[in-house]
Every structure is written in structure tokens, then in C-alpha cells.
Length: 184
Image 1 (cartoon, rainbow, N blue to C red):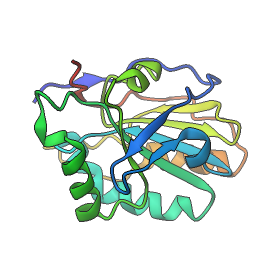
Image 2 (spheres, helix red, strand yellow):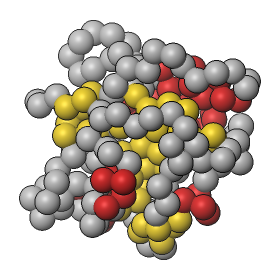
Image 3 (cartoon, rainbow, N blue to C red):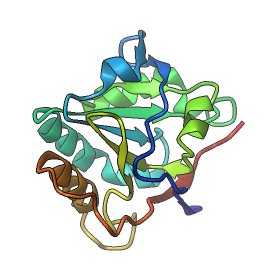
């Protein structure tokens, strides 16, 4: 299992816009339509990555909690489906149903959105404030498959709590680690 760290994405950077296929309902969805009133979490994930599978249940639970507080979650998969067919839009839709994703699961076929975000791995987490300015880019928590640490989502949830409480962004933002995005 190759381990890839997330790339830098500076706080204060405006979220790059997009309009991507939502595999759950077959419609296109823009960032403007999908963003939250108080904040937005954009996460790059995929179906087959063990690092994503490791956090899926906790991620769904966290999204259900914070979306009630005005922070929307938007999942994007940018993997090359020609070489990784398990990440196809049809299977994305199936996984979203099985895992009960409470958020859209978008397909970045051209990989342009992933490149605009400088995304490198799955999972890769970005938090934006109400004005779509970046306040966090990093790990869900320190848990990884096989390292024995519990999945808590503490890094992401602390970032979201700070946003909701008008506190400064986390000072120590540790990069996410996961499978590298499967580029074409």
C-alpha cells in the first residue's frame, strides 16, 4: 500500500470552482450550489483506497453532524477509471448508497478539479469558510490502516469547531496520507 502525503494548499486561498457530475443523482453540481452556509468541506476520496475505507463510517457520522450546523461536505473522485474501473461513476453511486453518504459524490473525469486543488491523495481534506477561503487542509486524524490508532476525526472536527466558534484555524495542520490519486 503506497503512502502519499497531501500537497500544500495555503490558508486563505479561494476554493476553485467546479461543476461536476453527482454520481448519486446523475445531475451536475457546482461548488456554488453545494457549498454550506457556514463552511464547506471538500474531500477527495475514491472507492478502493484502504485509507478511505478506513475512515468512511466516521466520515459519514461527522458529515451528518456538521451538515446540521451549516457546513456542507462534498466528496470528489478524480481517479483514472480506465485503469481503476472500481472507481467508475456507477460504482461510486453504489458505494455512496451502501455507505449512506449524506453528501454528493462527484466525478472529476478530466482531473482538472483535482489539479486546481493540488490534490495528491485519497483521502485529502479541505475546509473553507463561508466565503470559500481555505482554513484547513490536512488529515482526518492520525489513524491509518493497521497503525492501531482509533479513528476519531479529531483534526477535521477541531478545524470545523474552530470555524463555527470563530476561532483561528488550527496552527498545526498535518498532511493527509493515503493512496496517490490515479492520474491519467
